[in-house]
Length: 94
Image (cartoon, rainbow, N blue to C red; front, side):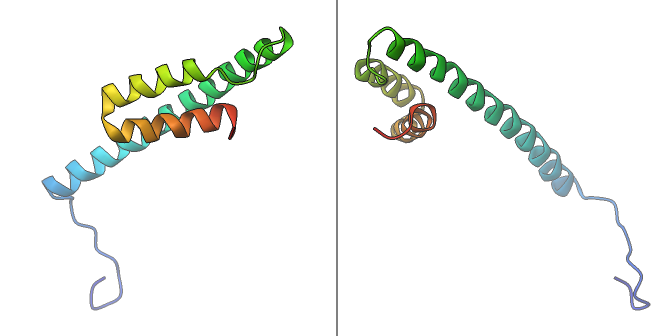
């Protein structure tokens, strides 16, 4: 604001522009990630329903261990936490 109370706009500096552009990209990536998680949840529901309908169990623990291992290998220890969150979202707590 200026002394007269009007707002002045100034061109974004190079760092501000870089940050702004990067944040827009992060937001777009987050939207895609959320969409993929929702899709994963829907596919998981089909697997669970089919497994239960055919007399199986809702959760297949050896499959979940494979998923945990894949995320841990790709992302390190935090990957395990991420995979656990995805599994919980997809099948609920066991």
